[in-house]
Structures are given as C-alpha cells and as structure tokens.
Image 1 (spheres, one colour):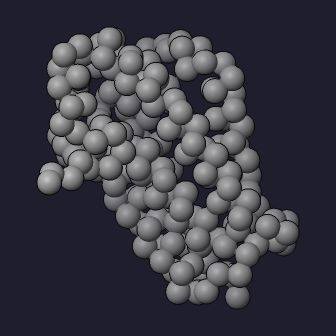
Image 2 (cartoon, rainbow, N blue to C red):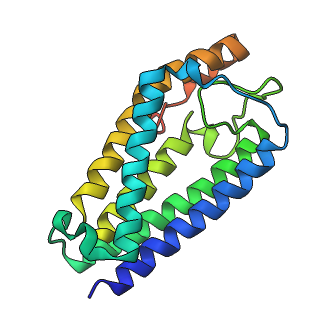
Length: 196
C-alpha cells in the first residue's frame, strides 16, 4: 500500500516549500531585479525544465500514483522509509541554511547589491549547503516514491546545479574578492573538507 509513502512525500515537500517560500518572500521584499541571462540561457532553460519534470512526476505520484506507475521500481519498505529520514534531514538543513542566508537568497547566480558574505551556520563547513539540501530532498522523495523518473529528473537537476556552481562562485569572487577566495580555500564546495 502506497498511501503512507505518499503522505510522507507530501509532508516533506509541503514543509520544505513552506520554509523556502517564506524565506524567498522575505528576501524578495527588496524588490531587486536580477539578470538571469548571466546563468546562460541554455542552462537556465534546461534547469527549469528538469525541475518542472521532477515536480510534475512528484505531484502525479502524490495525487494519482498509477499516472506515473510506469516508472515505479521495487524498493523494500525499509529503504523507502529511509527516504523519509533523508528528506527530513533535507528539511532541517534547508531551514538552517535559509535562516543563515537571510536576505542574500536569490534563485540565480547573480548576487544582491547589498549582499553580505555568509560564513556562519552550515556555511561554516560548506559553501553551497542549499544544493546539499536540494540533493537530500530529491533523494528522499525518490526513495519514498520508489520511482526512477522522479529520481532521474532529480539527478539531472543536481547535475545542472553543479554545472552552474562555478559561474555562481565567479560572481561571488567578483563581489567579495579575496575574502571569498580565502573562504573557498578553507571550505568545501558541497561537502565539508576533511582535515587530515
């Protein structure tokens, strides 16, 4: 029976969307406009289409699983429930990340005019904890839904975010200069650096 897994997917996503939505609204109060072309048109369009595919697949799973049943895979229940734990970890990390990021939040590679360099909270250990958050949420939903289409579209989204990251870091270097270079030298991009 899929109903408990569908409820778990909905709970994880509803919580994550609520947290992200609140912080986007708060950051958007500056009414600052961004030039999204700096991402690169092809990358921007491809990233949004992959995200749309992932969301459509996920909503189809929540609302009417047979609509996406063609992509279901047999996954043991314990592994699916592990997806709930992974998704919950993503929600917690999202909250921690966005609270620390504050008004610096954007949905593109461009930084805000009044941006500050954030190195507290999860940014103390990784430069892009929001992408780690996205990976945890997508992995959690893919496991809970036991659906390869949702998982594959999530992987494409992550690959495109990883591809976009150097351009984002270039913009941060332009904004913060040597301060950001020093931060890069001591902090991992997506995972904490291991001190040997």
